[in-house]
Image (cartoon, rainbow, N blue to C red; front, side):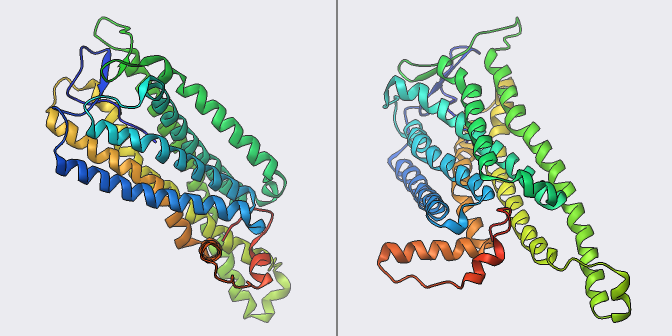
Length: 360
């Protein structure tokens, strides 16, 4: 998730920005408002994502390759909430950085790492859905837990590499200070280049891949709708049964894959709605020649909060789309409250677990 460490009350040139409150800090009312808003959304995000982790790790029927990617998203969101939200509040409330130099370097680093992990896990999920819908036979071979774990490990490793410059440029003075070198006569800084690179790496390229994958998926689902309609017509016309070969076993799998695919698409759309505005703001801001500081600060504050909301969206989406997640969430609450868990019929689990490609 993108964390905006730059405030608009303190720069000493185009190669430095500082993290700190604007004009001596907010009023008491603003402190209460900030604390309440971030506290509530953090509570929802932590409870929801911890539930996702418990459900996937404790329930054997939920341990599928697709769900491992959802588990990774939940872990990234938990790290973001624990690490970044206190830093965001500190920047809004305090007149100096209260967490020391290690946090000054570590928070921006982990912020970029979790952003990258979330984005590229969504790319992996899009490819997962693409294979499940467009190349189902290939998915039976490639869609394994081992492959999912390898992909996730590579995602975290590459995310850490991309985030390394954050450790080198942030340092603690009165505030957390970000220092970049000037690389051209027109005051273009290495930060400007890095900001554009981050946007391309974390948004432009991944969203292009995801868009192509889902356009192909939707086309295939449209074709499948036609096949299912034709199948229904044939089933009512005995004279046509001999001239058509119908694989009836593929129908329930197709419907379940459809639900899973649209749930994943909703997760991606929610992430973009929450995250893209702030990252476009961060992309454009360094190139503005003039701006109103109050307006920029207000925009930064609102967009920052919107980006934090992204961490709370996924569990709500899973609960809305997935009966299996909904029942598993309820079972966790019952077990924590000491209530006897209901015994679900075995056919519920067997009907929906096909090669680990679905989760509903």
